[in-house]
Every structure is written in structure tokens, then in C-alpha cells.
Image (cartoon, rainbow, N blue to C red; front, side, top):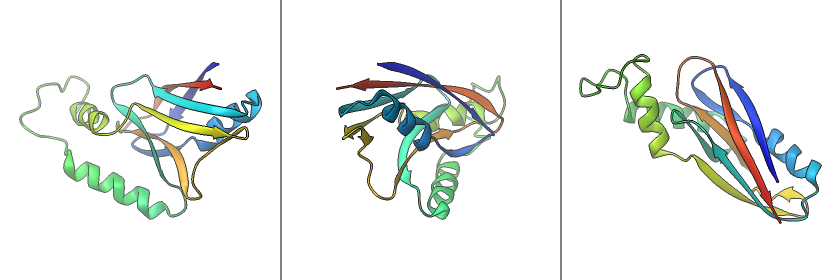
Length: 135
């Protein structure tokens, strides 16, 4: 089964989509299988990360912004602004697809794990995430 989620991001950062994905799994009643997520963009990504302490997400965002700063004079792809090329580099360093086992019709995430859409652009965007369930 394939479902498309449209996620409106308010801007740069890690945005929790765990509940939306879990709802799809629950609604389909897939007993055991695999949930594969794929983001259809080159300036955003997906990750599984700690969902308990927001400081972990904050630290990750700060670290990636230091690793891939805006304004590098070597960038030539700047048509959409100073965050354009850095967002593509950040997406290449992270993930566009993740897979999560389904066990007893639930995502088999660990206690402190959540699914995040990582928006790398500063402005709001509508992001498309495909959710594919197999049993």
C-alpha cells in the first residue's frame, strides 16, 4: 500500500511526523511488515532521532549548520538564495529514505525514537513523503 503525506514545514529544523506515519500503519492494520518512507525533495531529508529531549534535536541542527554553512564562496548554485546549496549538501549527508519494521500493526520504534522530516530550507515548504507498507 502506498500513501502520500503532505507536510507543511514552518522552516528549517526537525519536524516530528511520527504520529502521522503511525496513524497510517494503524489504519491499514498491517500486522507485520515494513514501513518505508521516501521524501521527494533534494533540500529536505528524513531521520529517526531522539523524541524525548528537544535539546538533542537543537544540537543536531546547530552541528549541521556549522558543518555546512551558508555563504561559502565556492557555491555556484545560489539562484534560490543563500540556503539553497547548503540545503542540498545537508540532504546528501542525511537520508531521503528510511525503513521501519511493523510489529503487531505498530511501528517497531524504540522507546525514545521518533520520525522526523528535516527541513533544510529557512522558509516554509510543502513536502511530499511517500509511505509504503508491505506485509
